[in-house]
Length: 133
Image 1 (cartoon, rainbow, N blue to C red):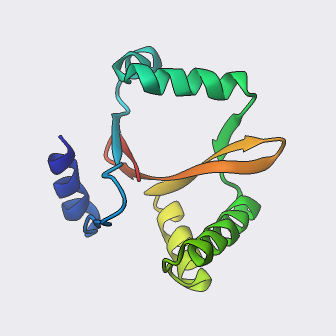
Image 2: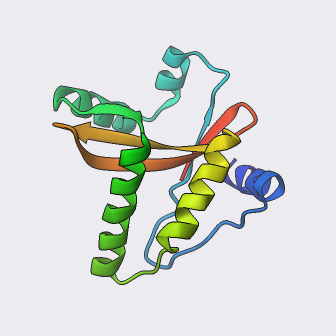
């Protein structure tokens, strides 16, 4: 299934899947034509447990607004400096963000606690599917 989705991403978006020696393959695929309860039941037991813990810890989830995108980039940039990896320039990233948002091809999903970003996921929308990178 992962290989099929990687090929779909390559054909639809002209993107190549990257590989990092120290990172696991972590792309998750969901079929958005399923009802919420079916999506939830298809998740692994540990994933459902993580969701319950997040709700219990009063995390809330939302799409990023313009200020959030700026904050996300700043956190990402600081993380890249601390962990010694490269990311694209902010101007280039913001142009890409605007381009893909206008086409409804991606979005930034945030987990927040007390109005602060604590986690995020950039997601691609392909046909009726969502791919969490």
